[in-house]
Length: 229
Image 1 (cartoon, rainbow, N blue to C red):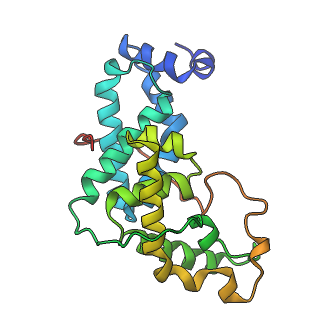
Image 2 (tube, rainbow, N blue to C red):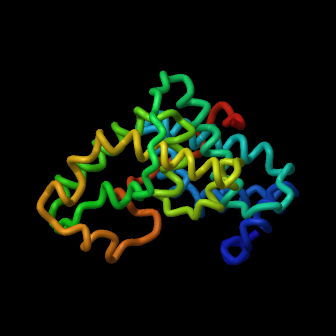
């Protein structure tokens, strides 16, 4: 199959061709989705090596399980579900911190995104590091929900499909996670820097609450398999 044919095929078509033995089809799927899978893994795990391993675990699982895909969701949703489950498998090995349920509806992106100049890369880097460090204190399930909804911009209903849980569960996990993060990150809120909250949320792009991080350059060497939560 030539490059033009590959590029014009849908994700579903590529997955079907992979199952039928096309040697190039799955590579194109990886090329299309690797960066976003990497972003989800990095923000969920907060560690580059762990995130890279989780993505590779997930890609191995997807490669091997492609024949089980029945088209009941988008291929990208299916891939994200496998990736999140690979991350949760790894994250559960670490000690989980208890969280207190607090009724808070403020999105994480509103808490973390101060009105700032684009000429402040060092400050953004510090913000990114503090965010990832704080996220690692959450139980894995809450962390995954917040990454998908507040950082990747997924609607709650779509995040529920990725996590394979009811929408109410996603909302609950997000609320509890935000409540746990508030005391850890309240110093990053715009009101604490003398800027107006009215400036938040302008010129935003879906799924860019923190600066994007480049993904791993090589996905050929893969190992293990991402289990299901």
